[in-house]
Length: 115
Length: 110
Image (tube, rainbow over all chains, first blue to last red; front, side, top):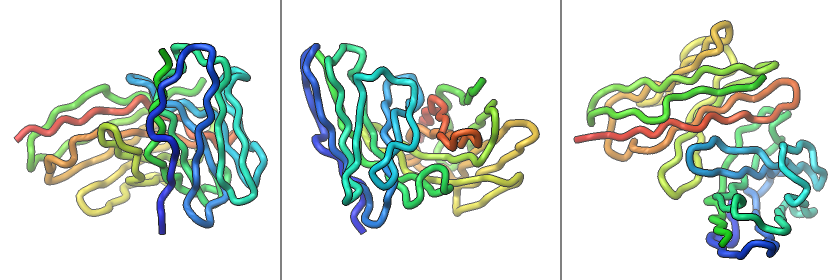
C-alpha cells in the first residue's frame, strides 16, 4: 500500500505571496491532519479533516486554511506569507481520525522557505 | 494547561540501553504515542500506550503511568541507525487533538 504523499517537497516563496500544499493520504484513510514543524518546537497542529469536513482546528491565524476533497486528498493554503511561516509542513493520515483512536501516518513533508 | 516535556538531547553508546522520558499535563488523557523522526524525514509510528504498564516491541519498549503523567521509551541494543529524534505525543480527551513534545534528539556514538 502506498504511503502518504505530499507535493511539492520543497518550496521557496517571498513575503506576501500565497502557497498551496497538497497531501494524498493512504488509500482508505478518511482523515488528514496538518502540522507545522519548526526547529526546537514540537509539531504544531493546524487542522484535521475527515470526510471533507474540518473536524478540529489549532491556534493558527486565518491565513492558514485547508480543504479536503471527496477522494480524501487534502490541500492547505497559506496566504500573505510571513518570514515566520518558514517550516516543515507535515500531513498525516489515519483511518478514523484522532477521535477514532487511529494511528497517524505521516508524509515526507513540504519544506517551505519564505524569503 | 497542556504541556509535554522531554529532554532536548541525549547521547548513548552503540550496543547500550537508553531511556527517553516524557512527562505530560493535559486536561484529559486518551493515549500516548511515540514516534521516531530521522533528520529530514517524516515521523514514523513506534508505539501507543493507553493503559498503565509496559508495551514491548522488539528492541523498543514503552511504559506509561497515568497517575504520574509519565512515560518512557526504552531502546535496547542501540544501533547507529537509532540516531534520530523521538517524539512523544498525548491525545487530549477533551478534543482528541494530539499534543506533541518538542522531541528528544538521540545521538549514538560508536
